[in-house]
Length: 126
Image (tube, rainbow, N blue to C red; front, side):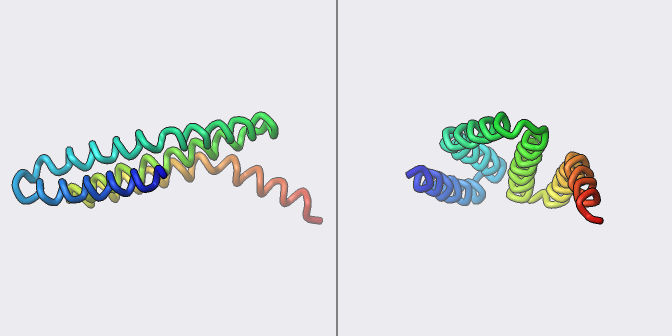
């Protein structure tokens, strides 16, 4: 099971990071980055199957919203990952700013979907 590998790598990264923080604090963040990259590597197959499903769904229901939703999801995941790394290295103020920027981008990308949904609703209502 992939989840067991991911959890195992996560715990191993956590233990090594804690040990490194005691002796070489500056190397702990590199450990976290490498552990995160390995976890993402093990998740790639699942990510590819999700993207394949979304592409097939998008071709079936040919509208631009699927692509926008996929981009929003990617931005959210990357933002959360960056925020976590910043918080792990003790830079919560930078993490908050990255989080804020990610939210603003997601909202700006959501405007066409919200606009179209509201337009459709107003046409349905008498």
